[in-house]
Image (cartoon, helix red, strand yellow):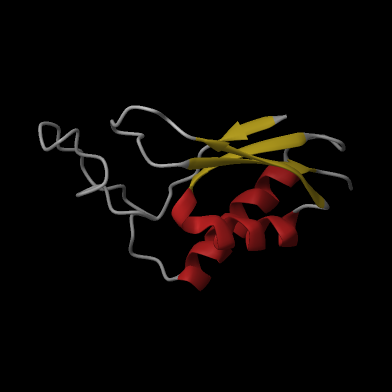
Length: 110
């Protein structure tokens, strides 16, 4: 199995600031600068590498911000045989991770 949280392609500034008290640096890559097509390709390449480095039948859990639902599903369709499940984590209290996050389970069958 693999459990990953690739970069979300969302700017840190304004999205992960702890009510302004905490200031994080932007990520080097996939921090809001990629187009939808570029981010989909970035994810597809990452997922393809996962499939090359895990055994047949592995399940990959991928965490992603809800803003990129289409990109992760598109990249997943290209790299995996099927989508097993979709989980949405709805946190009750605000904080750095107050937005809805999605966890996808992809099945690797070679």
